[in-house]
Length: 311
Image (cartoon, rainbow, N blue to C red; front, side, top):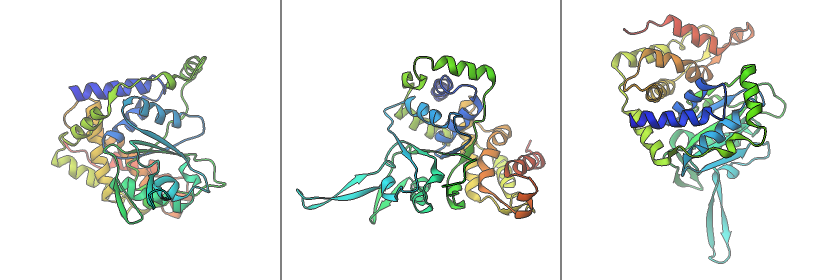
């Protein structure tokens, strides 16, 4: 119950700033609690950066860094670099922004593939190897990356290997007219994220992450997850299918989602709720399917309807 209370405080605090997006906020927070990373892909001005800042401000004691990705950004600008200190006559390591609890990788597709790949090891293994030396990252280390889906000039699409490192890909979308009016009212004098206070400590978040790993996940649901992810393999419209990493992410995110729903076990409905966000960005469509107007999210939604649900 204590874990549920912490999760609700987090969710309510973020929802007070990012209006009209309760489902996406819950999914992003569940992704963080599961130990994964999230890619927010949406149009400019829909609140991607605000969401990242709000999450960071709700956690007391957590460090937050932001990297604005540009074509001239270098891997050392993210990971860090050793600089010669003339006084001590040796090289001193200056850690980059990757050494933080929450990292906002803003417009990640504007950096070169070489710089994008600098995050691969950090996101996959919570460590960074710099000049042959391994550096462990924090126990939270949550990457929130953003990208604009409508701009192609001066951008570099994320490679499939990096897309697979994101546990989820979420979209915010436009809010209703009533919510947009409320947003205008909220920002009459100042931005509401500036007045947001911490509602949970860093230690409570680490406890939430440990509690999520203890949420019961039945043998039947393991088979269901494998069947759902496995259905992408051999599908005529899919050229590159989802890997076992997708199955692991689906299990872990649904376990974290159970905490937000005050349950100590996972249900098939929880898996279905996050399956599209977990699987769709990992698959690559065949050329015929791509040009016929079908997209990955539609295919995953069809598979959710087709795969028998355990009872």
